[in-house]
Amino acid sequence: MSGQQQKQYIVQPGGKLTGECRVPGDKSISHRSIILGAIAEGTTNITGFLEGEDALATLAAFRKMGVEIEGPEQGRVTVHGVGMNGLTLPEDAIDLGNSGTSIRLLCGLLAGQKFNTVLKGDNSLAKRPMGRVIDPLAKMGAVIGSNEGKLPLHVQGGNNLYAISYELPMASAQVKSCLLLAGMYAKGKTTIVEPAPTRDHSERMLAGMSYPIEVEGNKITIEGEGKLMATDIDVPADISSATFFMVGAAIAPGSDMTLCHVGVNSTRIGVINILKMMGADITLSNETVTGGEPVADIQVRYAPLKGINIPVDQVPLAIDEFPALFIAAACAEGQTILTGAKELRVKESDRIQAMAAGLVILGIDAQATDDGMIIEGGIMGSGEVDSLGDHRIAMAFAIAGLQAGGTIVIKDSANVTTSFPKFVELATAAGLVLDEIDG
Image 1: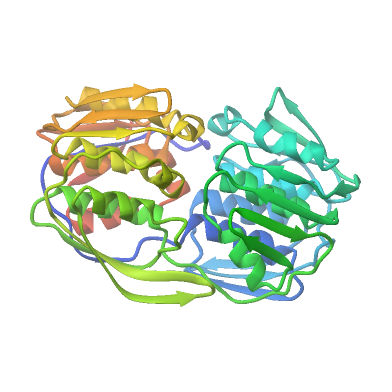
Image 2: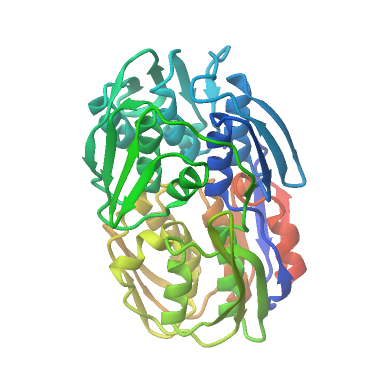
């Protein structure tokens, strides 16, 4: 929790999702637009910026380090870049709230600065593993103190960073982006090899800002000591946020929902691929490219879903979407099996355990495994589930109400604002019977 009041959702059963909706801007791209805009030469104008707590934590961090930033106002932000070496010493520790992306990416960037910084976060973030960025950064010459691989992180400045070639032990866009940012301050060329494709927003934005970077298959190489040139960035709607409406429309008879101007980057469309494999009726239209990122309108109409064995190669492409996909599996006919998703255990919560526990409470046969879940589609009942302060779990169980047999109460839902402000407003406008109360 980030100091908010306790909140809970009360979802009444039934309903369908209809109409058009534009969900907030992509969180990953919003973070990166601030980070790269801050260290670019010139002024970066951002539209569609996500005004959620996570992205605002990144924005606040750069203000603390001397970057002049105007906004956000209705998704518009202007970042006056200070160049690669223009950041200044913050007065005190930088608090990144609940944002794992902020802390891991900033770790790489700050390792190359001349000043010391302390990074901290809320109770949820304090439990998340940071060794996955600390260890490779140490190989580059960075010095980062931690509490046994957890927060707070003490990033020592003034160290010379050296280029490395590094094979990622896990498919993680956060770790990859952290090392790319550090590589910008290293002598020589840093090469990162991915075990499977992950979201490539950092690579696209770096190239769009004229920074020397090469992508060849699963190998990304960045040159140190280059220069970023400011540009205008249009942030598309976030496919992770759109997912809740896509799944809701897929499971609720009579639904016909269109999500507008959604980012459909090939490294992010696992959710579309998986839902289509399950039999979902999904159509993409108005496909175009903006700022190097493909976007489209996504129409989802109700169709009966069938359980599947989720292909392992789709897992990294849908890693944030699995809480919602578990709801789709619970409403499908037959068995759905997920493997190769151990990464879900180290998100804002242990998403495998939390979702399995909630589904069982609602009467679904869901068995957590070490690296995934086995779900038998069935009839959703009613009950009280705990989101454990995890925004995606709270929203996933909210859409479950569309197929529930009774009221669902979702505890600890305040953190939804970290990624999806106005979720309740948009969801109720689309047809979900949802109330948010203090409690």
